[in-house]
Length: 205
Image 1 (tube, helix red, strand yellow):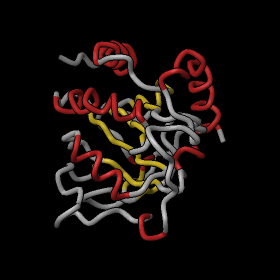
Image 2 (spheres, one colour):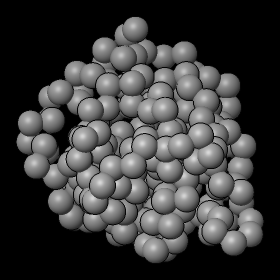
Image 3 (spheres, rainbow, N blue to C red):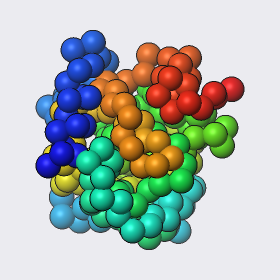
Image 4 (spheres, rainbow, N blue to C red):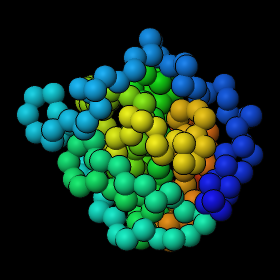
């Protein structure tokens, strides 16, 4: 319960300033389409129409039982790799970005997240939530996104940490602590650099 309370406070503290650059569950780019049962599983990692171009999901260790970390939730990889135990992600500074293919602001900031990931100084993990796998794969291919994502069609992660808008980005320290939550999209890559420097103590080029 402490983990949920800590993250919720972080989200509420900056939500008002970011509401104009985000999508709620009833908004987005174009018509909202609920996943059907055939679209609720990750796509294969090879073959036509797959998400083979994205990197394998990170390997996670045993869950770290701490009140200020990611929830003890295992989600399947959208592309290659085993399912990820989110509470077991430690050892690297990380941006955990909740997104969906129908969310316009998510699309806008993805190139900046990819740019940050390409520096090698910070890892980026997407959480594709309330989405259809084929639509998610198409967006990643269109934008040349290679950072990995887990697949969360039932929005389990969002419910655990009280995500009420997309995109939302969690800043996670090397020790696995959620040190900052940004509801809504980054305004620019420069803003992302500043926030990463402030909260993760990492200087992006």
